[in-house]
Image 1 (cartoon, rainbow, N blue to C red):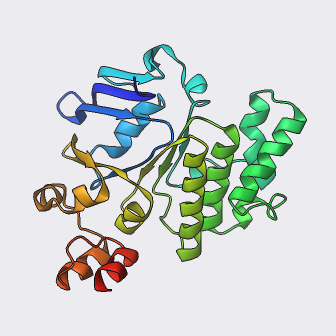
Image 2 (tube, rainbow, N blue to C red):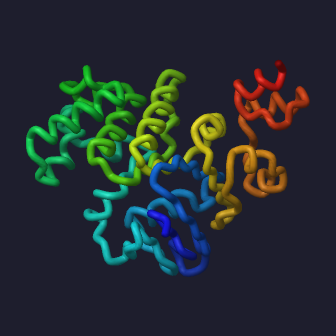
Amino acid sequence: MSYLSLQDVCYSYDDEHNAVENVSLDLELGEAVAIIGQNGAGKTTTVKMMNGLIRPSKGRVLLDGNDTNGISVAKLSQHVGYVFQNPDEQIFQDSVEKEIAFSLKKQKLSPVEIDTRVKDAATLCHLDKKLDEHPYNLPYSQRKFVTIAAIIAMDPEIMIFDEPTAGQDHSSIVRLNKIIKKLTSMNKLVITITHDMSFVVNNFEHVIVFAQAHKQKEGSPAEIFSDEALLRKSKLEPPVIAQLAQKLGFDEALTIEDLVRAVN
């Protein structure tokens, strides 16, 4: 059985329309998974059912074989960490160190364990020299890494990142690439909602497409971005490099590296 399984889940914000309808997913530890689709497609509603922020009106969410309906949100948060799109919705401490350590203290870990986790997470997110800073003295892009570090320090098996590349420059996106690779090498399941198709093809082998409240397809980036009917239905476009490659006659190239190999 998969570590995280959604079984025919539905959710409605009103009595007339389902925001998510009959979605089933099976995800494993050690995977990096991208969830893509236009606004309103059902992406965020689906991932919020994974950590109990909302509960399915139909179907089941299983975490390591256990129905999450019987698990509190507080307990689920120890296993499924969620980084919101807007970091200002999560940050409320007056230093980076306190922000990263807050949930660890709630878990009543030892001071030594807390210190180790805070430093390790801060180092991975390039915040080790910012621990004494007030988070709101940092630019928006760095505040996003503060919230990522806080989730990493909690050490959940599953980490959900909502639009992590929004507002980030190239160097920050490279840092995100490294963080995702590090987490998956630690056997974490990393789930990312994103509109950044270049980020998708460079970091994820498992891509899930949502449109009109349904899961439309899941597969590799090549399988997804070669499906023209799917892209039209989902109102998605391939990455810019893939569009350039197609114009040059290299239809299977999705990344710069792919294009260079094709040209040579």
